Image (tube, rainbow, N blue to C red; front, side, top):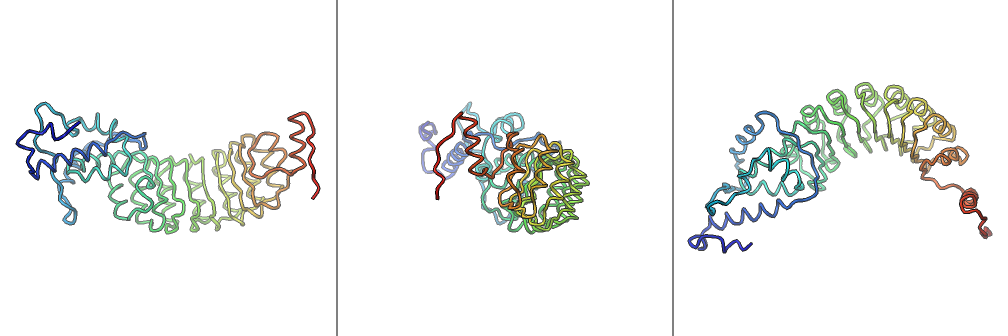
Length: 361
């Protein structure tokens, strides 16, 4: 549509207000191009709209001035902001716009800022990777200051600076969290994990990969207070030893479905065997680089874990093929290829003939 042709002749002169009005609506249309759904939206709490609208009237002194979303328009024309916010814009429009574009949209006017803040307050899922690879501390605080209905939280891009003081208030405002990803967040401590375990009893999925601060005491608190825990990533948590894994298996083994203990030379057969005996629903187990794990632990898995679908034992040099064969026959996905002789036998059984292979070196 040719926008200048629709403007009243008196407004075609280079009037600053008309130019800004047209530019603002152009930005709004560009930013609100419909995208695949990327974030859930919960209905805002009672009084949340009024609180955010009042807050947006007080613009920070260091922020650039923004024009009000007003201006002259054609008789009968309907602006985007004239549509019902909570019934139309929030669930059916902003819910389909990527988060990075919403952050640009809120710069258009005070009204758009209030609309975006109301949307952020109702988010169910927040993934910092949707904003960018690096997020300043102040930006994250502004994005999550009104969020009280989050169910999924992923903060991997904040790993360089995220501290207990940044995370604990967010956890306190969102007790219904079900999935939290804190991979690589090395500045956190046992305090943050304690706040998560105590304040989020519905937690089902947790990633603590490459968090060197996770020790046995922290894992015990998590096992005691998270009855719904199903998936746990403890990759490269090198302070954990067999005793901590045994306690986890005994306390939460019945519900565990996925567990990663990769890159931890302290984990051995004792922990794997206890997991096997206490985790009948275990489907995915990653033991990559667990140098102390051997064939005895794998045999116990084959005996006690009928639901097992995938097993990662690469670089587990004490795991023999004889212990893996039973799992292979059940169709378990194993990241270690069988020896050449067994591969040829399997091919012969499947194809019905023995291939001629020259095995001379």
